[in-house]
Length: 106
Image (tube, rainbow, N blue to C red; front, side):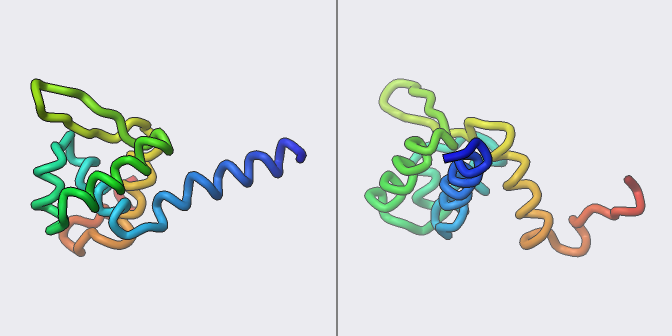
């Protein structure tokens, strides 16, 4: 496999994590700051088992990191690249006209 092919395969694996709606929602919520599993359950209106499974996949892909405080585990975006991609996706799909940046101001 060439370096280009390896890079393309790595990029495809990376983007697959964004292709799941639940994982994408978690990353969007985490882009605003760290959250516990129970906070994510409420934000996603999802069961703990489902949230934990999605977080496990994101941990496996090294897209989130954890911090323990007593019995509570907090999750945050692990990589600046992930945060930038979430920002682009938010701007493209979630921002309202009043929150969307004006490209002429750049």
